[in-house]
Image 1 (spheres, rainbow, N blue to C red):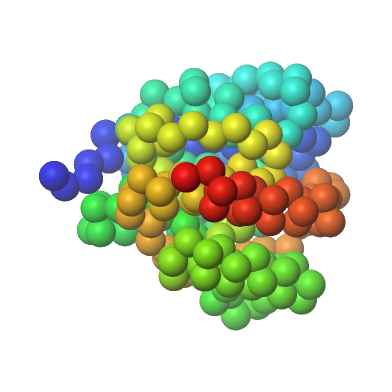
Image 2: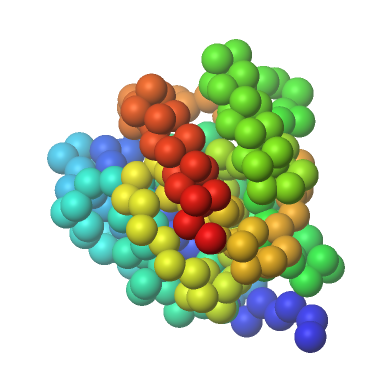
Length: 228
């Protein structure tokens, strides 16, 4: 059965992204030609992010008081109505104009997930240490789970709502993205990539806690092997 895109739900987790969120949601809304809804899940921002989202007439705002990247995404996905879910950060670093390419790839390949890989970005905006760390994590994931992905840590993905509803995701923070790949692999869901680009954050501070997140990601990979 060929994949169809009836309604796209864009889920964007935010925490103090007042300088970035308006441009991010506006570009998505104006560029995406498919019927869509934009769901912003905010972790109690104090910088005016919520007010900016409320000022638009095309976003749904959900307050998620529990901190954590994974918790915010799960909350948004639980409230999504689309048969395809796009997860993307609200910090302006991902090239959201590529959503159309992701959906085309999903249809062409009849895929359950499409990841936007930043590994081919000619500007290398990710930064050297993040790039190398990502490469190591991705190599380990591919080796352990017999996959051929180039950017397992990409937070920009198109996902079948039916597929995501068929896996149980428990990680509450950054390891959520890796857990999703593990669970999709075990279900033999088809995962493919498109080449995308990455941009330097213009406003605000990154939320990533590198050491803590790395430990959680590798722990999640090990648990995935143990828990058949």
